[in-house]
Length: 319
DNA sequence: CAGTGTCAAGGTGGA
DNA sequence: TCCACCTTGACACTG
Image (cartoon, rainbow, N blue to C red; front, side):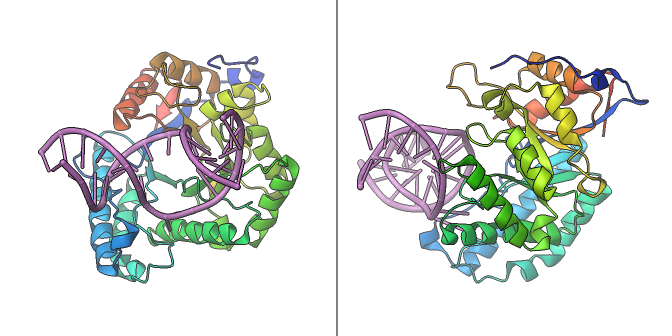
């Protein structure tokens, strides 16, 4: 599970002038900064006023996190889906987009002027290929919300929303076909930001590449999920194939990286970065440009460690 | 105030 | 058919 299977591709031996460009980031939460952009509340206590107050606090914290990141050279960040609680729920009638339009624009300007890369990642309940049309409708509503956040930030098409293919329902081919079918009906505002990610139990990177072949959606490669769930393709080989699914307008390929928690069951994310494993991953993945998201529990601490590792290696150029 | 059961949302697989 | 689990932080109630 922890082995890097397969031979290095010949292309990985070619060294470009200046080295590979990297950004390294972490998702959603900064553990040391003293605020959370994830604050929420119970649906039972919903009110528009409460939503706006919570969202205002979340946005203020997001601004602090981004500034902290810039100070520490971290230029890749995943914005939490909880930024605006219940935004896609029918109960929500608050005009949060108008309320925070200026705030979003200001944050977006900060993001662009500092060269920060942004992603979002809706959680497990978003299933575009579900047989139940209500589930699909709720999923699309949630993707609409995600696209609205990134649009309000006035970010270009390189700001992405990453999604898993969805359920298997005992029929891989049929479930992939349903994903493709629904994808074709999505609003372009959603489609321009959507990328698909291999998961640890169901759809593999090879499945994602097959879907890309049909609809040209970029593929976000999750290194750890690939170790859990693949047909044995080598990591360097997959990176080389997947990088080609990202066009210029999509920006640099995004990659999710984590490693196995040493005690917990297979698939559990580590508490701290495994520096040896990460170094090895960098070594075999050069010279492809990548933005690497570290899905590791201690968040910014591991990001700083990863940046130190990459900086010490002249084959890479930190963005 | 610490401890703890629960939280919008789905899928999977074992009992 | 039912229920625990996935994975996880934070809410909100309990004592």
